[in-house]
Amino acid sequence: MKVNKKIDKQYFGFVLGILLPILSLFTIYKIKFAIYMDFIAFIKAMLSAGLYSKVMALAVYFGNIAVFMLFAKLNYLRFTRGMLGATILYTFFIVIVKFL
Image: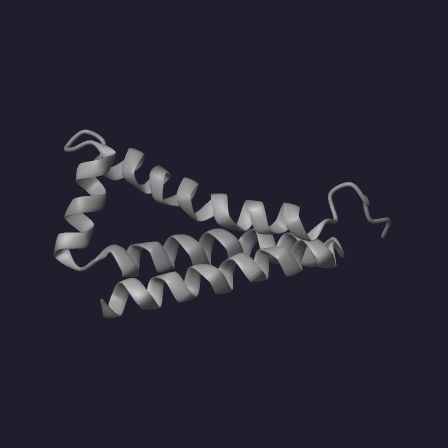
């Protein structure tokens, strides 16, 4: 399979890996909670209820794993390396938020 060299860049994967969980979290908010509160209140409610790390972990792992598997199947290995780096960075962030 021919790999598109313009897309197969580590920084593209990293940027998408950083943005995709944020978009996933915003999508969860829009689908389920938008009629009850604004986005800032949604984040504050999750933080006060102790759910932020759990919801963010779901957004990170389910959001990134689908894109990761797709690009790994397409043999865009540098792109997937960037996605993996972003996922590891988010994992550190989630652990810090969970234990603080």
